[in-house]
Length: 276
Image 1 (spheres, helix red, strand yellow):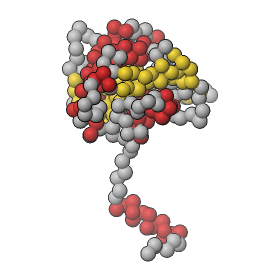
Image 2 (tube, rainbow, N blue to C red):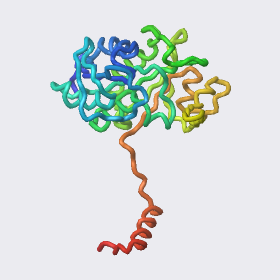
Image 3 (cartoon, rainbow, N blue to C red):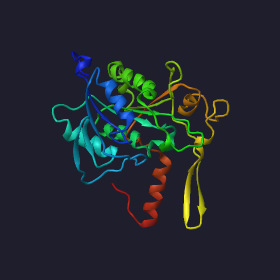
Image 4 (tube, helix red, strand yellow):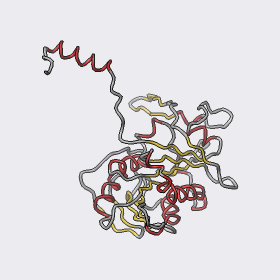
């Protein structure tokens, strides 16, 4: 937000990966609309775990919240920032609220919610991705029905961050914020600034002609048993705190002499003369 603008002038592009008719997106939209001009550009249906998949061409439909696209969250951000908000580039992109947490390094490239925030970073627009941890206890996430009231914690922190993070200079140091929120539990949860967990427990099991991929990382989420160290997003969520991870995009490059030496050996083996 530039100097002299009020909160009422804040322009937000809102998207998600659960689909434009999801309860989580509607809850966030209604909360943000109280203090900002919100344009929704979201997938017409569920595109969870699609990463940064991008389409060549998609159909767009008018929706009572804004625009629905037959495409991915990344499509929605590209279309929203470059075409569907023509009067002014939004100050902020918000993705969510996702039903289900997005925790740990291995999730960052897989999640459609996170990928929408990363796509915004390539437009130099800061972003907030909000997800809600839902304990499953053997059930499937698709079988869990959540009402608007259960997104109260998510809308509270997302609202606060959209109102204050820009003016506080948070995005001078981060391209986007990965926010994970526990289900409401009687009162507002405290916030912890975290880093993504490095824990990874994907494996696979073959059954005849089929292979089933299993994400075992969710099997240990009890607060007194979780192995993730202090300061990680998974531990914060397991212990009932809101996790906010400030993250950067695009990916950085670690230039080092070892790889330079390997490139020189390749040139020698291939008979390539050194330049200069």
